[in-house]
Amino acid sequence: MLSRGGALRTIADLASLPGPRGVGMTPARVATPAWYDVTWNPTAGCSPVGPGCAHCEALRTVAQLARIGGKAGARYAGLTATGRSGSRWTGELRVRDDVLTWPLLQRRGRRILVDSLSDLFHEKLATETIDLIHAVMTIAHWHRFLILTRRAGLMRSYYDDPLTPQRIAVQIEHLAKAVMPELVSLPRARGGDPGAIPVASIAARRNWAAGLARVVRHEAAPGGARSADTALDPWPLPNLWLGVAVEDQDRAARVGELMQTPAALRWVCFEPLLGPVRTDMVPLGNDCYADALGGICFSLDGRGRRLAGPRPNLPALDWVIAGGETGAGARPTDPDWLRDLRDRCRTAVVPFFFKQWGEWAPAPDDQPTQKMARRRRRAAGRLIDGRSWDELPAAMRQGSRKPR
Image 1 (tube, one colour):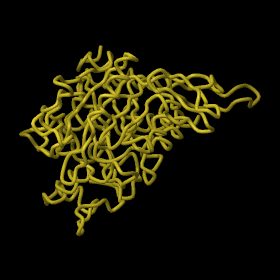
Image 2 (cartoon, rainbow, N blue to C red):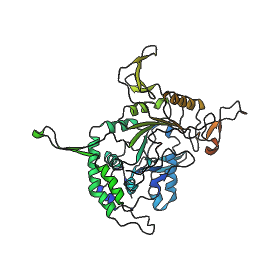
Image 3 (cartoon, rainbow, N blue to C red):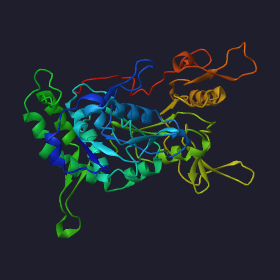
Image 4 (cartoon, rainbow, N blue to C red):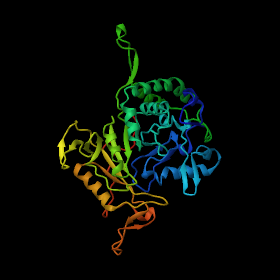
């Protein structure tokens, strides 16, 4: 069951929804070394925001799921439409209420990619829904959640809002009272019934307690100097890793927004890479720039020379992913663009992960007049200058684990 328009009905309704099965959660593909373990899609639907969205893989996936028909296809029907130029988003967003609590029922810690079929910070998604999703991620502290967005400005505004932790804390209290008791009391699924919620184990309930303890209550100060409220500690959430998708230098300002966003770990996915990107010239606004891999901020004089300041340095990126475009109509990624990103990351000692060339790859040596040759994704491979690049942040190399 899904809510239309991106808004929840009532939080209490979640307790009676069918179990988290099917396409809401998808294991990572094994063709590429896994940089995440599973996807979690509490929302579905999107709309394009730049040239990187022209051949969106999520769009193709949702359109294919809608064509399946039956109950599974009904979850995604109407999110896409087909015209002469192929599939397109209709602009409708839906909340996958049936999978919202799924992370709470998974005892083993996982690297979870959030909303691979949508954008958590889409302008049509209700703030209440974003708060509830964050409440689940706060309680499920043993997982590591990876968020990737092209709406970096909206993401920054959300985390910069001093009321955001309070709103999330309120949603956590609602979950604790209205939803989580039902996850414990419902009968255990029998005979593989796909519509039953698996009952939470005693170990799972112990894990919840540590997550619920992140809510901090401040009592009202004497004389009304401060009203009673709730907050989160720690904040920003240490198990929430924020990322932005960037396709070319014209969209590099998204990296600047990310660098100015409170986060435990920051990463950028340059996919599909459609042009060269200067990570040492990331716009911050007001004629200020940053070296994203070093965190150094600077301005330029009339001759284009760097001047120190006028603002404090920012946290550098923790991780860089890059890749070419896949699917029909894919555009080539110049090898020199990737080499530049790789070399800059190596110099700054920032992990670099190359996903794939996509539909195009460097032309063979016996074709000197061509720089790129069209191939299928698997044949194109994922080697740059004869080797793969599978570097991960230290925190991610720990792999899946059970919470202590």
